[in-house]
Amino acid sequence: MTTESPERRKLGTLALAALGVVYGDIGTSPLYTMKEVFAGAHHAVPITHDNILGILSIIFWSLTLIVAIKYAWVILRADNKGEGGIMALMALVLRHFEGRVLGIRMLLLGLFGASLFYGDSVITPAISVLSAVEGLEVATPAFKPFIIPITLAVLAALFVFQRHGTARVGGLFGRVMLLWFLVLAVAGITNIVMQPEVLAALNPYYALVYLARDPVLGYFSLGAAVLAVTGAEALYADMGHFGRRSVQLAWYGLVLPALVLNYFGQGALLLSNPAAIANPFYLMAPSWALYPMVAIATVATVIASQAVISGTYSITQQAIQLGYSPRMEVQHTSSEERGQVYLPAINWALLVAVAILVVGFGSSSALASAYGIAVTGTMIITTVLAYVVARTQWGWSRIKAVLVFGIFLVVDVAYFSANLAKIEDGGWFPLALGGAIFLLMTTWKRGRRLLQSRLASEALPMDAFVKDTTDTGIPDIPGTAVFMTTNPVFVPHALLHSMKHYKCLHERIVILTVDSFDIPHVPAAQRVMVERLNKRFVLVRVFFGFMDEPNLPEALQWCTEQGLELDMMDTSFFLGRETLIPQLNSEMSLWREKLFIAMFRNAGSAAAYFKLPPNRVVELGTQIVL
Image 1 (cartoon, rainbow, N blue to C red):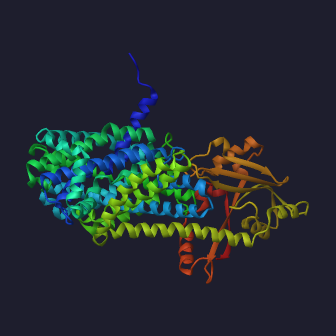
Image 2 (cartoon, helix red, strand yellow; image 1 turned 180 degrees about the vertical axis):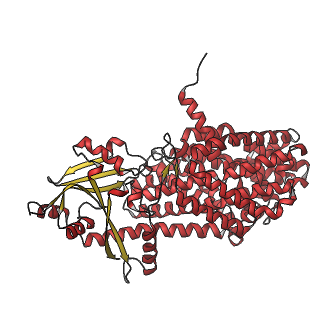
Image 3 (cartoon, rainbow, N blue to C red; image 1 turned 30 degrees about the horizontal axis):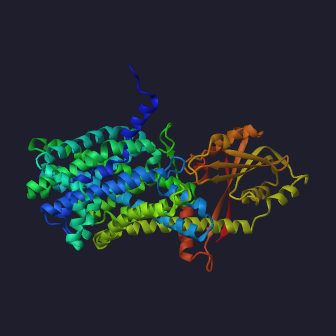
């Protein structure tokens, strides 16, 4: 009798959790995709035998090319030490183009792609939960006046539950989604056996004939067909939560077959009964199964929002560590998977934005007009950045890379351009939100550089200060003082103000610099580097990856290995608190200076972000003119 290895059990557990967190979005697309294609408000496709086979062929080959091959097979290889997402991909690219013009362009492209993902993270919960609650209306029309209030209540409960972490969320949701995908498959099979000719759509010939027969209608129908692949980016963004193998196992083993069977089942139903377009998903089921279908669909569509919510946490944490976002609280929710995080500020901001969207659009059909632009825009940028990684790190030849990623890019651009027709009907929202996030990210990065430049221009060289304060008779204070700075070449302003006010120095002074690398994790044994400047001054550099928890007291324990004993009860942390003043004719325009100052003022404190003990922190203020 053989026993299952712990590695396989863990892989199976993570794959089950991935079903609930990663595949909720793409897994609930069958609820509305076919209906939007054939009965949508814009460019509805006539229900004919050839059109049904053509659309099914497009959906099947889109799932195959975009999700099964591009993301699950190729893009997931572009992991940054196990982490995924467009920020991690951008960090990989920048290693080879740091400081070059092309690197700056790749940087801006990656930032804009990450910004578009935020637009998707707002629309997905809104359309998913709305479609869930509207599903109740199918069985019980009396619920119609309560659709919006019920939706808002469900959203509030979903976001409140996020603080328990993706491990517990995924464990709960994974079992539900396992049942959901099995239901999708069974419902599809029962209809396919009635019209087996629908399987002919597996041949790409039908997609090509459909597009060639009426290119204009075929082109615009892509704007609705894209709903079948929304959520593909979550495979990559959430890879750090569960690992590549578990994400792939869930996709190839269950999600893809179930989706294909269900779409083809809906197509088979429409072939035999075109009137079923009123709601092809629910009408696939026998009448006795309607209420159970509505119930499980309601739960599944709520779960669908989890993929982008988790992805947004990961991308935001990466943005903070890479210096493109102000500090905010990051909570690690798993002791096993370091990528599982929860950010309270992002969680509540998403809830507010999603609620506004639900009230503003009022229905899932209206939201479908806004859906697709952010997703396909991010897909294009991911393709471009992955091409660079394939050429610079995977050793692919130019011909191979152009051939593979060229095919991906053609498909991505086709879907993106078809969705541009939706801008007037709501597509402007994710673009506007993405543009706003992009502006905030670039303003923060540029503002921080300007601030560091101003601080450096007024600072004293560290080596000269150390020399000048040696044997000068300045009184000593027992204990250790830690002064944090971003540039150890210069004296921290907090140190100068401390000496000015207290007219003394601690008997041991640690100049502490925190460096964030473009890799996800730094091994604990390589966390710190200690350099003694003289008997009083010690320079300590602490290194974190962009997915590490920046816990300084824990990291400083590793100083003991290099001969520096730090007793936290005898150590004080001195932080500078700058008050920024805008000025005209600066390196940034005045309005961006004011925007940066507002972001700086509302950023989380360094003490809380670095987990410093509150009773050991002293803050000293200074004014800086930008």
